[in-house]
Amino acid sequence: MTFRLAHITRLLGVALLLALGGCSGGYSFTGASIPPQAKTISVKTFPNYASTINPQLSQKLSDDLRNMFSSQTSLDVVGGDGDLQVSGEITDYSTRTSAISSGDEASMIRFSITIKVKFVNRYDPDTDFEQSFTRYRDYNAQLNFSSVESSLMGEIVNELCEDVFNKAVVNW
Image: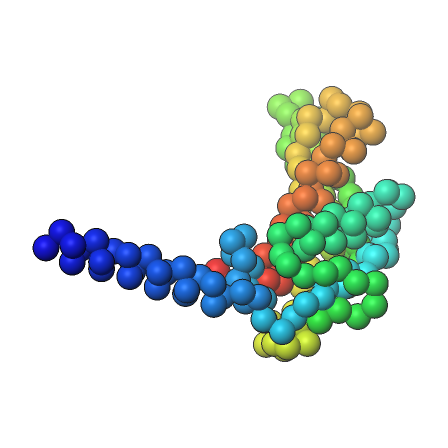
């Protein structure tokens, strides 16, 4: 009986390894679901059409998206049109009051960034999309925006990249 159980366990282990080995190209351990024939991705630089322009935002967003796809998938980032293509634009970069104190003064300010993204999958057009993504951070109105802008922008850009990545290649 012990021999039979050990034999069955060994067979199940081999079957599991073979099943996982057969998934190359279509799945990664980050949860990305990419057509096996897709080998490249292109991320065009996002032009900034917001009414307020941060000169670093366009390059940071585009570079962070490239880095995310490069580090979390087996896709090669290319300069031309890839098998998967990400393009878009920055449409909003703004601050506005999000909370008022008892003295009718702003107590919290909301800093938000909105991007419009177009995603094209040459091998699975059903996953193509055009969508806007917005993320924001609230900060204390007593703080000077220029003192928190860089760190808040980094946090927001990271979340926007995750949103785009998840929409493009993670099919939960």
